[in-house]
Amino acid sequence: MLAGIYVERDSFFHRLDPRAKLAWALMVLAASMATQFNGLKGSPVFASVVLSLAASGLGAGLAALVMLNASVFLLVSVLMWAGMYAAEGRVIAQLWWLRITDVGALVALGKFLLIINPVLAFAVFFASTRPYHVSWTLERLGVPSKLATAFVIAICLLPSMARRARDVIDVQRARGLALDKGGLLERLAKYAPVLIPLMARLIGDVWDLSMVLAARGLGYARRRTYVLEPRWRLRDTLFLAASLAFYGGVAAWGLLP
Amino acid sequence: MPRARAVYAAAVAAGLAVAAAVVWAFAQALAASPENPWAAFPISQAFLAARGALLILGGVVWALGTAAFVMELAGYTVTRRGLRRTGVGVASWSVVDVALTALSAAVYGGLLFATAPIVLVPGFTWLRPANALAPLFGMFFGLPGCLGAAIGNLIADILGGFFGVGSIGGFVGNFLIAYLPYKFVRDHSFSTAPSIGEFYVWGVLGQAIVSAVYICWWLDVMQAFIGLPVFVIWGIIAPIIFSNNVIVTATLSPVLGRALFPLIKARGLYWRDRL
Image: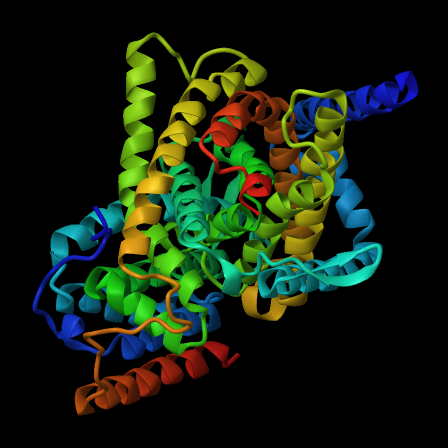
């Protein structure tokens, strides 16, 4: 249960130091922010992130699934941003009341990549880094040990909590709860039979988790100790330098008028 | 005593009235301007019209909110007698506090993923039932619950595609949603008039205004990095944060709080019992 979204593989990304991977994910975010008004300039970042997904051993299937889900974001992005830039640039399409211009389309694509690039980058980071090492990295960045542990446990428990929430919803639906019917207040009130069992489970889990943490000696020392600490190697330096050159270049290109 | 009861009843009525008014006003705005209801939505207009004042007020709210966040985590709080040590800062947390933070964050983040948003008006805005839990986490679990709400929202941002400079505002903003009722509601049982009345003041209206102003002030100040136009920040995002928090917490949180408080207290997890 505590594996969370980590996937055991022996890939290039799995062998990198977590600090290098976190710096890479933040560089992807920074480059995506710098190119958010021109999707064309942001596309090399997107290509690099998809390549990283493959290099982390997670497979093209997952990338395709993520991109399929992301198409909803692209649609929303086009509807929202193309509308805002309808008066600028050359009209390339007209969908009912929506005028899509070349400027609007580039902004919409840039904003879409601003959403999807960091999601994929952080998916690579969390899927290729053991929770144990995520906690170690956060501590190295100055986050208090107890907070880092809480954050990592939360990340790890998230998939099972989401599954549990869906299970409760399914069970209540089988009992006749129609969450999508009725007026606004009626529909909101119907969530009480979903939220109360989930909270009751949380209450039950707290003592179990506390005992696990106490058995592992959490809080015994001010600073948590680690048996297996990642070591910074030459490949991490090279990876970081290459990332810095690539994303720095893309960001500079994105900031140019 | 009857006067105090009348004040609490007025607070509940005000909270529910604001929630009903938000729904009604948005329906009217949609009827008046189907293509862009935000332009006709009175709350959007109010936020946009008051942007100059909100930039000053937001700066004060941001400074106070951030100071409260840092001080509380460091184990200090402001009282009428000045700065005092609370003894519940992160450094003095027990394993139960760490477990409460982690599980609150996982439940909050997991629910944000798993529950489909309720569409208030098709295609335009929606309500997140999970938001009803954030003030309750603070009131029942104390500081670990407040931080759980903040971390849960941050995780949802990271995995949901909204992580960026704006997430810093969202992190502390969500902390404040739980912190205000934790700090200012004296009775957390939801079984007395003061408990429910104070919840509607701090857990419904107070947190909705503070979180909307805190988050949107940060987005406005960081506009160069985030790239959102002023109309989107104050005309769409601020009304969505305010409306969502008011409607969900006014209608759902008291019901959940009344049902959950005895369970939490019986299992020894209520923060005052653990001090």
